Image 1 (cartoon, rainbow, N blue to C red):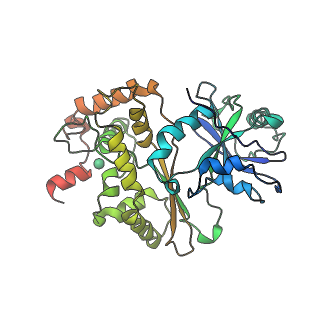
Image 2: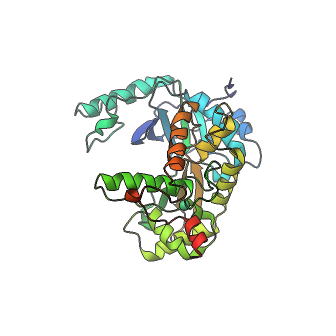
Image 3: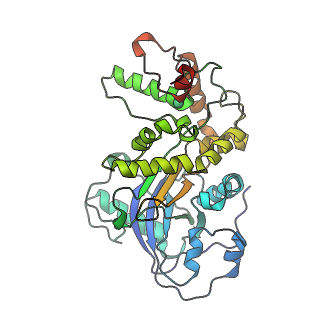
Length: 366
Ligand SMILES: [Zn+2]
C-alpha cells in the first residue's frame, strides 16, 4: 500500500483557479496564489534533496506568485485517488528519468476552502449557460457534450504539475510542441519479419477502417524515425508533429532538436527494459508492464525558451500509471494486428495500406 508523504503542502487561501483543459481522466486548472511571505517548511525542500532540480511546487517556496504550476484534479471518482497516483509515479516512473526530463508533479492538499465543490459549481453553471459563480471559467463556448455531467471527484488532494504551457507571445507560432512518441521500439510480441512497427501497424488498421467508411486517412509518423538518427526524414516527421502554419525554418529547428535530443532515446530504452515479453504473455500483475504501457502513451512537452528557436526545454508528462484493467483491450489490439497481418504487410487486399514504416524502408533500402 502506498504511503503518504510526510508533508503535503496545503492550498493557500486566496488562490485563484482558472480552467485550462480537460482530458479523459482529469481537469486541468491554472493556479495563481497571492504573494507569500512566510518561510517554507524545511521538510518540503528536504523531500527532494540536494542536487535535484526541484519540481515547480518548490518555486512557490520563495515569495512570489505561484504561476508556474498547474492544478490537476481527477474527474472520475472511480480513478485512483491523487495520493495513490502520486505514490505510483514516485515509485515506478520518477526513478527512470533524470528530474529535468520529467514534468514535475507533487501532491497538494485542497481540503480547505471547499475548492472541489466550488469548481464543480462552476462546471454546473457552465453547462447550464450561466456565468460561473466562482469565476474559474470564461465560458465562451459550451462545454463539450461528451464531457457534460463529468465533475471533479471528491478527492482531498490534487496534483500540482509543472506548467509546460507557453505564455511568451514574442516567440510566436512555434513556442510549445506536445506529442505522443508512442511505441519507440517494436512490440516484443510482433512477428519476426514485420514490415510495420506497432504504431504503424495500428495506424494502418485504423486508416483501413476509415477508408471503408469513406473517411480521409489520419496522418501519422513512424515512431522509429524519432530515434533513427537518419536525418533525411526528420523534417517530414517534424512537420507532422508541429501544428500547421509554422514556417519551414521553425520546422527545421524543431527537426534539429529531434535529431539531437536524448530524451527520446531514454524513453525508448525504458520502454524496452520494462517490457521484454509483450502484452500477450506479459504478467498484468507486474507493475513494470503497466509502467511500460504508461511510457508508450506518454506525452512529450517541448517548450522553446529562446527567441531564436535554438533553446528548448523538453519534459515527459501524462504519466499516470495505466490500470491493469486495460489488459484485455491491449491484448485485443495486439491479436488483431498479428492475426489480420498488419505487422507483416499482409492485410486483406481490399484493406491494403501503404508501407511507410521505418522497418519497410530499411528492408527496401530506401
Ligand atoms: Zn513504424
